[in-house]
Each structure stands twice: as C-alpha cells, then as structure tokens.
Amino acid sequence: MNTLALRKFREKLAAGRAAYGLWVTLESPSVTEMAVALGLDWVVIDAEHGCLDWADVVAHLRVAVRSETVALVRVAELDRGLIKRTLDLGADGVVVPWVETEEQLRRAVSFAHYPPEGCRGIGAERATGWGECMAEHTAEANANVLVVPIIETIRTADDIDRMTQVDGVDVFFFGPADFSSTAGFRGQWEGPGVARRILDLKDAVRNAGKHCGVVAAGDPNLAERLEQGFLMLGLGLDGGLLLRSLHASLAAVGRDRKIRSGFRIEE
View 1 (cartoon, rainbow, N blue to C red):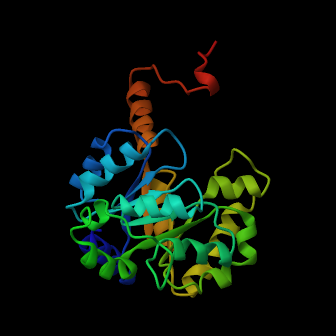
View 2 (view 1 turned 90 degrees about the vertical axis):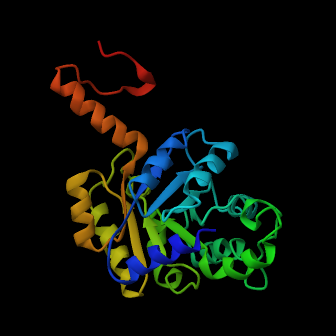
C-alpha cells in the first residue's frame, strides 16, 4: 500500500485542490507507467469492463508502487472475494460500481477492512510483502485504504444522505452514462435532465463533507467539472484519449471517420 501517495491524494482534496487521474482499460502496463511518469495523482485500473485479467491488473499495480500516484482498481461488482483479492495484490483501494444504498456501501467498506472493523481476510501476498511485513501492513491498511463507490443509477438519490454518513468513504464517483441509462436515456452521456440530477447529488455529497469525482468528456468539460466542485477528475479513458488524438491527426489529412458498431466499414 502506497501510504505516501494516499496521504498526498487526501491532502489535495482536503485543501480543495483537484486530483487528476487516468482511467486505465488497456492491457499494457506502459499506460500506467506513462501516467506515473507524468505525475498524475491517481489511476483507476478497470477490471469491470474490458479484458484485463488478474495478471494485467498486477502488472499495472507494479509500475505505480514506488510513485506518488494512487493506484485503484475498479472491481467487477460488489463482492467480498473480488475486493479482498484486489487489495491483496497491492491496490491502494477499490472503486465499486453500481452502489445504490447505504447497506451496499457499508458492505463494501467492511470487505475492504481487516477485523475488527471489517471482514477482510489476511493473505501472504503482495500487500503484506508475501507475509514478511504482515504486522506493518495490517496496522496501517484500515486507516489508509480508499473505498470509492460509483453513483450511476437514479435509485441512489433515495439513499444518498444516508450513504454520505458511512465512515470509511472519502470520495463518491459519478458515472453519467449509466446514470443516463437508468433514467431512460441509454447511449447518452447525460440525457435530458440528467446533468441537473447529478449536480444535485454532487451537492448532497459535498454538503456532507465528502468529495466527488468524475471522468471528463473532454478538455472544456474538465474545466467545467472543476468549477462545479468535482475534485477527483479523470482526464479521460486511455482508449478514448488515444482515439481523440488519432481523430485529430486523421482529420488533418482528410482521412477521419467514426468507428461503427461491429467495426463495419462505412459504405
């Protein structure tokens, strides 16, 4: 566990400063290595969507371990085994999708903490130096681990005030695309009225003394999100940022086109 990076991350948020990061979906650990070399505050390694397996995840974690970049892993679902294994591999915390209720959030926190505060089992893996620093790691892990729920359904609005009272949670992340889908606007980043609903939830989180995060849809949106009060700011997804650059270069030579579903060629 990178306690130095975690402390600096929390200090930035507490001071009202933005912590910038990258959402990692591609297999190559060079992606995370670039993020670390550029001094990003955090990366989220996405093990919910895409094709990253455990070997890919640990390869990304390895390149961040001696840096000042917090390395989080988005697990596939709220699951005790997934969270335990992710933290055993040395992640600084977990990002948990589709959290809708206080009860679900309390379970996520419990899964990420050793007893007596939680129910995380102790393993002789990377996190404990393969057992060699077990006492040191278990003494500091509960106070430092990050548990970041993703707010991505309209149902969350019913329980958001209770969720913000759960101890052990510093940041609530927002997923506009899924939120839009549950509001009836599948395939839209923020459908009609969704932007306002997300901002209302963001205000509820901030009024409770917690912080908010989101991935920006582009550079102008990055500045907009900061002004709105989101402090854990994603510059984008690695694949999306690569596509943005490719589109710009292809447009410059008159060869740009959009990718179609099923990778069909445009007629």
